[in-house]
Amino acid sequence: MAAIFYYPWYGTPARDGAWQHWQQNGAAPPERIGSDFFPARGAYSSGDPAVLAAQMAEIARAGIAQVIVSWWGRGSLEDSRLPAVAAAARSRGLGVAVHVEPYEGRTAASVGTDVAYLRRLGVRDVYVYASSSVPAPEWAALNAELSGVRLFANTALAGRAAAGGFAGLYTYDVLVYSGAAFPRICRQAARLELVCAPSVGPGYSARSATGDSRVRGRERGAVYDFMWSQALRAAAPVVTITSYNEWHEGTQIEPARARPGYESYDGAWGLRGAPAERAYLDRTAYWTARLSRARSPAGGGM
Image 1 (cartoon, helix red, strand yellow):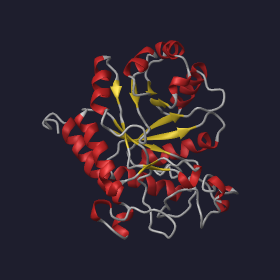
Image 2: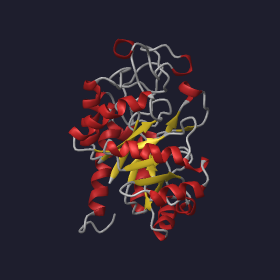
Image 3: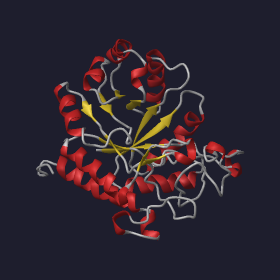
């Protein structure tokens, strides 16, 4: 199964009363946004039903089975948008998971309360970002009480995830993890009966949004292909994708247009112009098809 991290935090004055998240690092949307890339659909609102419908259609066509929605706690903007995102995803046959971010005051106990709330919304998979910020014994106590839901630890250390009683692990960070370690990580996870869900992504570039000078160039799609190949080589039962639309960190595979002053997808797999705008979504469909064949009884692996 393939799952993808999704961010519902974007907004526009016309729909939301103000720009939300496009103005990072002093940017002045809609002409200048806080990203090294520019979305093909422009600076949009995640609260726009038409945008949600189009995005979920793209995700489904790419062969992805589950959308993992960034969530910053009860009462947050992302919380208010979760029901609409979930409805749009499910209308396309997509499963819905939640990425519990490190909101202020987050503890294992508060996540337990969150899980009870999220279950009422039909969420059964919960990915816990920066899970190592809470001691493993506290996670273990929580996980021992849970049933009918899976918590995934954000770590490459299978022993740490097991000590916390998690059902599985994921890496998320596509700057630190190139994919080369996926086979080892998944072997260790399998020994401890954990679900291995390594995270693949096209690259990383957050200079415009945060000033971060670290970059993992996309290399015309080669970075994405390598990470996917390693996830399949690792026989990962779940492959997570970082990300559909984290435009600040430049990890997105959502369509991007060529525009002066911004990077573009031109050159990826030899594509240019309009075909290049959706190059990463189309390539994702190629890899999810390979993943499906590899996991089928007759697939025989890679």
